[in-house]
Length: 394
Image (cartoon, rainbow, N blue to C red):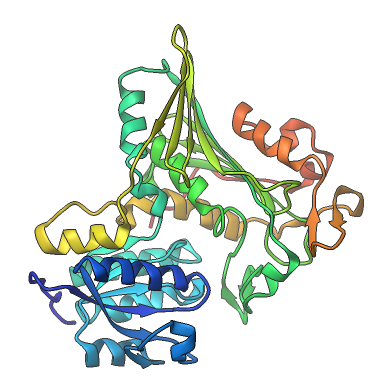
């Protein structure tokens, strides 16, 4: 095991593992931070090397072997944006070399793999940031302050809603897409664990219940309209040790795409947070509605600042323990129920499936803190699964 690689005032040398697909955003972000003199792209790890046309300029060193690339470049940090089942092994490959990490969400496909990663990173003494970018929003601490001040009274619960549109091709974009497992290995790709994972993690953050030991029980309803293994229309309710309730509903089969949000329900008001927009609506008794806008701190920039001057990391592995309990509950739940044929339809000319009425159900679940079955969706009753109160945290 190497000692963590120390920082100087020079740009942070970074290796990016996974530069296609979602990884393009990391390429663009690294370029943005490089222009500010904060980081330098030292290498790219890809199974099929990028061409200069794909990359859009002169390429850094490339390799199919992350460990070898970290050794040859002397990188101090690695951004890992690879298929979910590879996260743990690649994170440990970096940590064993003393290389700090920005690891994309979800951090692992199972709680056991998450613990292996988190314990290995801690033993190596490297910094690890988990890529829940919404938790870099300055709205999160601001909302928690509003809750602590009693701005909306006593919190009755927190809801989350994500109504998104995805074509059938989305589930064919990679071998692991839409899969619960692949070649005997856990993947756990699904609406709540991957594309709308931020809704779950952000709701848990606002509830002040981000660690594994904060979770008392989890209920899931996992369904699918598409011809896939994983869920594309699902909801989860987390009961926290504090006695709170966090209910998040999501679909990739919406009638119309909408901005995902979380909502804090208080006894004398509510706070709605559109987390992709850093936009907050505060509604409370005896006040007019207030709309608030916030900045956000980029997670790679925060990691660089942490290594430079000790700035506190925004999203440590421990801060995602409760989210990983949700992933584990979804992993161990029965396979998602296929929706009956009369519960969905194809949209002509759009290569996508829609569940009529799901947009309203998603909103109602977040508003009333109810699961689909409790809202009267006949197709959800048999999908209800309750994880026992004893939730493992090791």
